[in-house]
Image 1 (cartoon, rainbow, N blue to C red):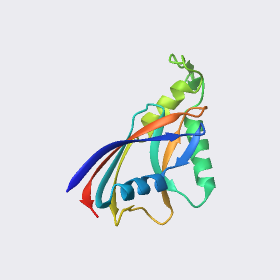
Image 2: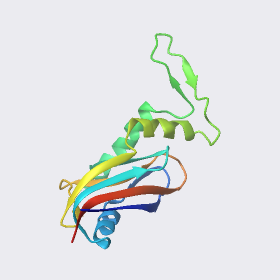
Image 3: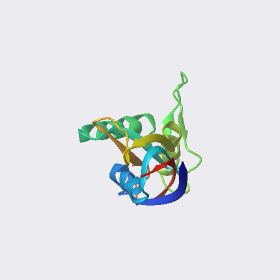
Image 4: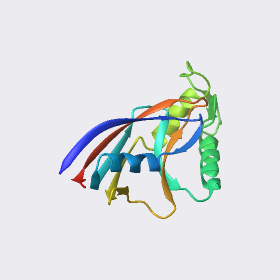
Length: 151
């Protein structure tokens, strides 16, 4: 059994999904791992890691629309009977800042996956995505920890 820690950097296109599945599989193969456990951790509080469908792009579009509906920009409406508008106190970096933190809190900043024969085990229609919650492109760092058997 061997293990490695490393960092992978990704540039996002701003708000939306970046498929990182192939990059992760290449990382496993370049480091000569055959089988084991692959842990990913985002070092950011305004993006997420998620596994979802990679066949129909409407799935990702619908996910984004749904998330925007439950985490609006600028303010939200309380669930109390008076339906008060509550404005975010944290807005130093723009109107997308606090909503990005909320979206990250509602999703995942780390994933643990198994791999075999140098490839992450996923379902037929699954991919691993870096989900950017900020408007502008960002450089994102993902910590990779692999524990496994070398080829």
